[in-house]
Length: 280
Image (cartoon, rainbow, N blue to C red):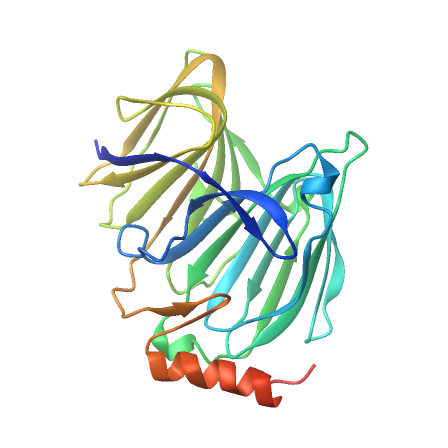
């Protein structure tokens, strides 16, 4: 089994126009989570904490993956994509050479809003690729019941021979939503030497022998698989993995490149109106 070598609690912070979120990782120490850059948890039950949203802003050099649990988000971008993602839906956006978009939250009837945004880095050879948008609705995301009763929703990757709806991503990511029944155990093997991360968002239990609870981030090390033992109330967590890029990272705000010169060029282009390289 792998070792749960890093366990931390997500940190409250402000993003966008003043949205209160919890950041699991994304404090510019990218070595542990390569090829992933950031994971934000935006669950909340007070609309004043999130309704200001994320008005128009640029991205370059990354992919942003938004997974909704409750409420919905209206989105639009400079490529002409627009719509609303609701509970269970996923928005997988490849910013590539540059895109400008906005994400504006809409609360559920319960006033709650819930979901996660993951940033995945792009390799140097793809940072200036054409932007791409994938909208995946909840019913397109398969849910597999494992032998021990665990339920695995497959956003990207596979489980029990069932593949998720998002394919052809260079870092070969796997993005699973895992629900483990009370007092039951879930196991997952990883054959390659890849980055493996878990983020707990429901219940509690143990991951590779270490106690975890809501808003705990776990980064695993070593070879082999992981083991999740749920507590009395069960446990739900995101299980994310991918192939490290092992490339230099130059990062400021919403733009991630490989060198400071590339980073400065991106902001210069944004200021002078030449940032967007691909039309609708």
